[in-house]
Length: 416
Image 1 (spheres, rainbow, N blue to C red):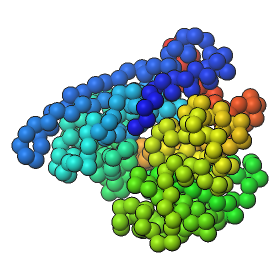
Image 2 (cartoon, rainbow, N blue to C red):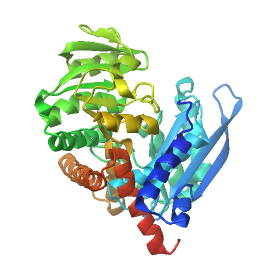
Image 3 (cartoon, rainbow, N blue to C red):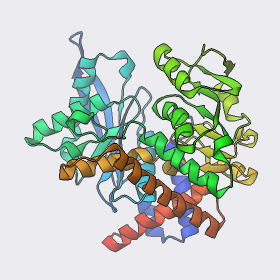
Image 4 (cartoon, rainbow, N blue to C red):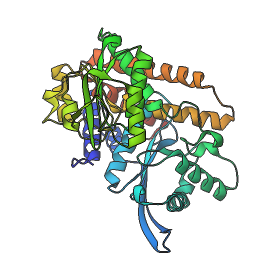
């Protein structure tokens, strides 16, 4: 995790947008802080018979535009400030794609890699017993995030329904298909990002079929970006990819399908035939048309921003760029697609899942893709128009679109 406090960064980004929008001081102050947050102490019986005590959080940042929505992260270094920052970003993310939801986030301090399935299930159920009364399809809807899975969501939904005594699949999204999940959720984050790259390339007159691209971070979003980039854009050359252990580079291009297969089978990118080693630091400074940072936050900083050579940077990770780096990239002419726009495909399809659960009718994969494309394209257009009108970098422009919508809802409700 980054040494920079992510919530301080989230507040700085909001402050800049608030000044540009001329927000009154009460609205600005209201939007700087979570509306409510919960801290839990979770006792869990481990397989060896001992009881371990875990710390959990849930932050409901703002619900002016609708029920709060956001993932639950399980991470050994989870902090309340990371959860607050991500809940704030979820608020702006649901707003920028114009879906009727607010922002929330949850977290548990734990290392799921060291836990058995039984221990994970007991932890998942303990969390819902603690937070369940604050959740609901019209209140707060969690989803998977770092180190949580559709299976963990299914256990959480089951615990909620057991407590409530009735079926309510829409209380949690990102579930497996047999218990109310949505088609198209698996690749939604990357797919939404690639749709946005397509729109940005068109706006910049870049021929995407001949464009080269590189991916830092090869988890779910990075793997899908590798293959979908070529599928949706009709071409492109994957030059390099990295994960937490290192990466591979080939100036003639790497086969995305073969690379994903290698990663899934061996657990790492290193050792992929025909690839030279490349580090996580080097890949960011690679000469390429499109760069996808899809790993952790705080990787593009004032130190390395001036060395970035990509024409488009599509942030599939949350918070990969610091505020100082944003300014440097803008002055350099790097077209940044900010995280809460670029990776909003995930929450958009989560919203579609919630809708399908609520009226108990399920869409085809084709319908999901069509609706996602429309939402992402409209969101890009709003941000693009705002940046042209105000002559500011894309993150600030996206913030201005989002914050103005949330501020408007707060005002209409009479909160400020």
